[in-house]
Amino acid sequence: MSPRALLLALASVSFIDASAAQAQASPVAPASVERPARIRLFGQNGVGLTMFTNAHCEDAYEEEIEGSGAVSLGFKALVGKRQPNASIGIPQSDTTRTLEDRNRLMANPYYTEFVLVPGQPVALQAQIASGAGLSCGRGRGVQVSFVPEAGVDYEGDMIRDFDAMRCGIAVRQVAADGSLSPVQTAPWPKKCDAPPRPAPSLMTLFLDADQLQYRLAEEGAEVDSIDNDKGGIEDLEEMLQEAPLAAGVGLCIVSDEALDASALGAKLPGLLEARGVADRVVRFRTGALEAEWGLTAQHPLSFALAEYYCRAASGQR
Image (cartoon, rainbow, N blue to C red):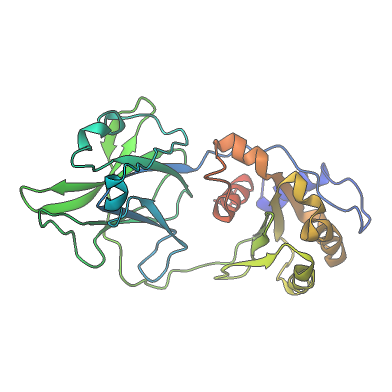
């Protein structure tokens, strides 16, 4: 079934009223979409590990996340502070089971786990501050990149060899039984070749308490947002009036049920009806997707994950 046919089929069984005041696609049960990738990052005092998402090169990435540690955390160790481990379900491995072996000189090792969008390149950058004189890469530190796959778990870890005065980053795949295998990585390019960015045939809208995030269905469109308050209604009206929604472009809305009565949530169905695209809409609930993928309050659904879900559910991955 084509993406448009799928969206129309879903919409046709879920519409409840054709009036502008009530027109809204009822949420449908989550489609069978393989869960996103996940990664466990290791850190400790004196070691900083940073992750960059959708990272095509140093000049083009979506988000910079302090994954684990920081070179400035030494003082916390001296006063007894320790970063707790944060897991979202990646199986335990030999690395986690032997984590305390790293706890020397108040290193306070720990790990944090994150969700990754499959198919989008991820870059890891690590730095170290060491009294032994080991400094990795200076400035930018050491860097690697790889492309995560759907349903696969990973570990990202800084490797330090004090005898050889060398360091690097290891990326390992974590199997369901906790066994590990190396992942092939590549250097993170400093500059990007201009990649083709075709226009998607699906527009994703992700509504949370603060804002409506969306990506227009046009070539090279970036993620944009509108504040979820009364002041944002005019911006929403203008966006939907001007959005490129040619025939064949579906709309996928992801939101929490409680937000249906919010400033933008209450206005959105009528605006879609007025634009004449209400029959192209399919809606998924944030809570259902978070439950399906085991997300937490610390690692909630993001626009990137919502878009991945919408595209995968409509066969556009």
